[in-house]
Image (cartoon, rainbow, N blue to C red; front, side, top):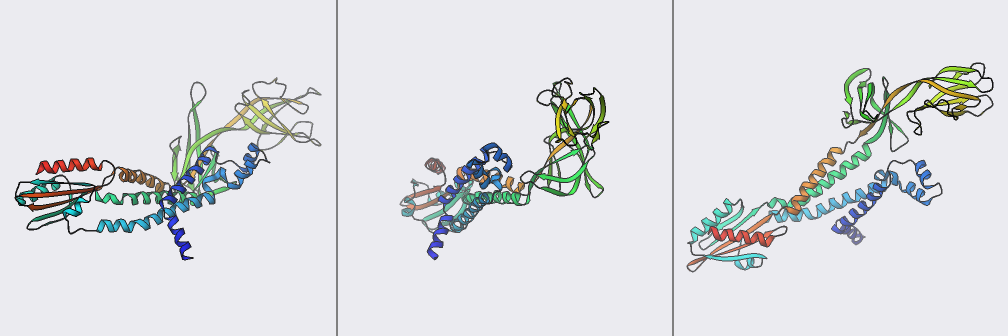
Length: 446
């Protein structure tokens, strides 16, 4: 049992497992990018067919809400465990390497370094020591250790040695991103809110679920207006809103595209707008009797066609119905007949489809109101994610391009001259080139 658990631990803390799970997450994320997110189950069945195995698989696996499925979050959790174990496994070794202090150097030991060279100087021993110390000090090297004996000088110098910990900055950044993602997934939400001018509400319709969320405050639309270009396309639409707590006004702001309102960690983005019909003057002509009736209809209540039991009511409005201009949907209910409805074109009163039952219908005038639509979002983990990504970029750059460097220097009296041995360890490419440059400069300094 212990050996089995040890194998699991070794697998979870291995770099191979890191690469594998990152590839799996990347492949699944590609599916989430290709497949539209936020589709309802009914929309999936309608698109692929109710008997399609693809539709069933998509619904079963939750691929239209991929990033909030438990199995995808479990993969992210495994990555978090892997990063934590990798850090736990390797950090003590790095810390030990950092804390290790060498107290004795000899020529045989330094000759084993890949980057090693030696030279002789005819200067006296004291001048050589002074020159070596001066060189490393003047060129920004930090002294870790030096010792001067009667016939030897030993010194260890370093640059950017702290960068050996940069990989753990990468680990920490990844953990911040994962933590932020989890916080956003479990405690955040994304939804929509629609308001007519003068109305207020605290209800947000969630996009991922067929549910509504009640905010602890209300949003009131004081004014909404749209500006148009000469060709009729909107150039700007603005919502002037007030935040209400109880009956108290606590905040006023104009919400524009790319200029959201933020209150108590909840963001309101100007997302859309539209029109709804409030009233319309509708003319009915009885094709049997030729009688004509004009009624002012609304969406709030039904009206009766005079001399009958037929009820009519406004149902909907479109600015441009099938590229035929504005149209009004009118519903009709007659005793003993199934309810019916039809679209009545405003700009084509003689259109043959402008009829309901035995009545020809035309619309004389309409009153419409704009509504404004907000995308409402709360993501408590956003700043953790942003901080994590920023740290990830910074620490990855320092990990791959930073070069913690350490130099060992030994000087020994050798007859009438001084023998100098220099070795270097560095991270990253071009080590040999860097050592050649260092050695050339030391030689010139001496």
